[in-house]
Image (cartoon, rainbow over all chains, first blue to last red; front, side):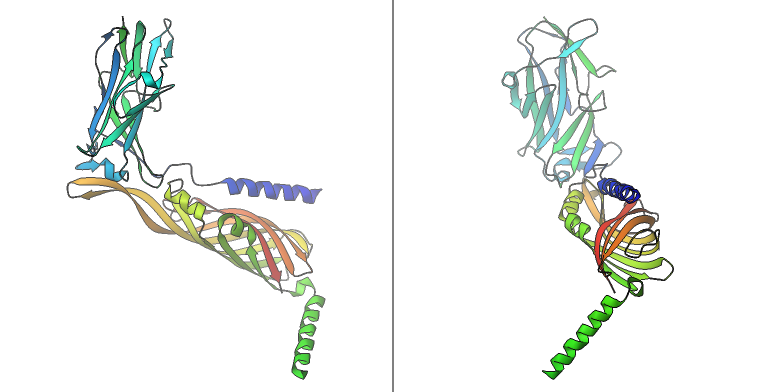
Length: 196
Length: 188
């Protein structure tokens, strides 16, 4: 019996040690702060039903990194990533203290540049335009009913006043995360607007 | 024909003599770790020299070329890739049986491999981030527990679990190294 206990102890230790890896970090990941304004939106606080709220991005592959001299080539850094992704949320006020996420069908989004899909948040894809070496996104979100609304960019990040754009590229290439401040957000990271 | 007969008789005599000798008379053992070979494409061979007073000393040498570990390293799941270990060890038998017993060991480890970091490179007015791979070496110390059993007083099966800590170059090397295996060996 004692021998079985020893063996069980030995094997359970073996199991747990075998499970140990040094992979609690993601070592192909690089996070940098870049100039503000990579993503913008229409700063209008009053809309009518049927209008669209447009979110826009049009930024160069050459970015100024905060604290560094010289422009950073984000296209080459990422092994020629064709897409930088980011997310944002549009919510409607349903009571004095409660807000709910607005869901619309993807087909209702007005996609002019890049691509987007809508679920718990809008997942926006800035697509690389080799003609002018910029990443581009311009998508309108339909405002279908009256009420108080708000827009925020912190759904998939710890940041409130920044948007995080993440490169989508091959697993072996560097994943670049660009932090860029978004204008016209309040201190809690929201932009409030009305639909009449 | 006569020569062949003499050779066969000699061989029979050697084998017979080995069978008759007790396990305590056999002071040397070679082992191969089958668990590491199967699970992580690691070649791990060991030699152990036995003394009369329950102590033994040995040397273990590992070389790893695992496709999965290499992929993890390239895809950034780890920032170091251990390739080799040279592990001298001292063991003490915890139980008195000769054909099956528990043991404890202390070991040192000279280990090395590849290390990856992201660095910024300036090039003619623009810059990029790129991954730089360099080599690391380190020295670790640790302990293990194991269980060993013999069949026909020569064929060894050994279970071993242990770990140690690197202490010279942990910016690049893994903090911890494990010494886990199921070894098959021959004692002579």
